[in-house]
Length: 390
Image (cartoon, rainbow, N blue to C red; front, side, top):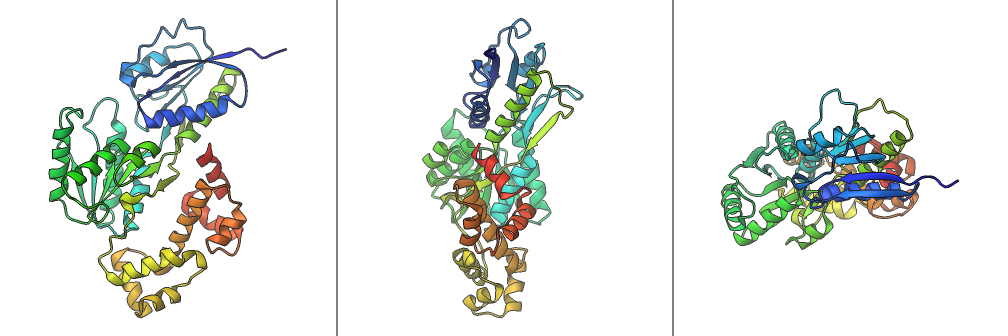
């Protein structure tokens, strides 16, 4: 006997890269199992015009909870519901509705580490004026600022917001005036890729060199937007596809009558996809800069600390002191991090066997590589790949 077609409502913001990636993960799950009839409301989230979901004869709903009004309507439906959001959304304490969201603290930490590893000492954050639906921008700002404060780094915040982002000339002028006054070289975290592209355009208009004077990291890894930016924008991949897949799987279980005691499901970002906007080492100490360039070029060849020391013609103790002062960590740590970043790139961007990846990145065994990978990134290379490729 054929299984009945399930009717699922998907409520998301069609203008949001994050939402579209979540829906891509939902689609990947739905294509694996039952037959589904999909109801989609895909306007901008604040413009959603939903039917009376209490009388809609559906089987389940997956909805973006970042807008309080939409979330309230969805929760009134007497149906299985799974919510998702950008880490900041309307969510009633004690609610029985499962909520999937991104880890904004981890996004900010990953971005800060990406810039710190390139030697930046001056940082800035560029987000959005606070509104009822973009609290994720403030969460990222606070986490980024707090993380850098512990490292005694200088920090600036773009808070001179035009009333409307549609007035591009005013926004560009505000961004340009802000950037010109800040100490250089400067590492900037943009709240998302849209803001990151705007920063790059302001740098171009005001003759600020990227990445030499200002390096920029966005969030969402919108491939088209990042490559349309000039220069191409580095960006955090949030893992939204994996989130969408897991949310759809949970909704499927709920439709079958199962319940979940867990209410909050938080997803960590997967990586910073490095492009030209951060392709630089902003290190004042020429010996440390020379050593880091050598490490990046030779890390996959199994180099050790003595080889790095020999390449820059300085005593080991002297170079270690310079590394501690300029970067805050040792030569050995720099080699290890560089190797693991190479591993992460190959794991997430290729289908090469782990044995081959270990060989190409200078590890003697998959086991050793995996142990260090778990310690650095919190999951095995295999699991990291599955999440990255959903």
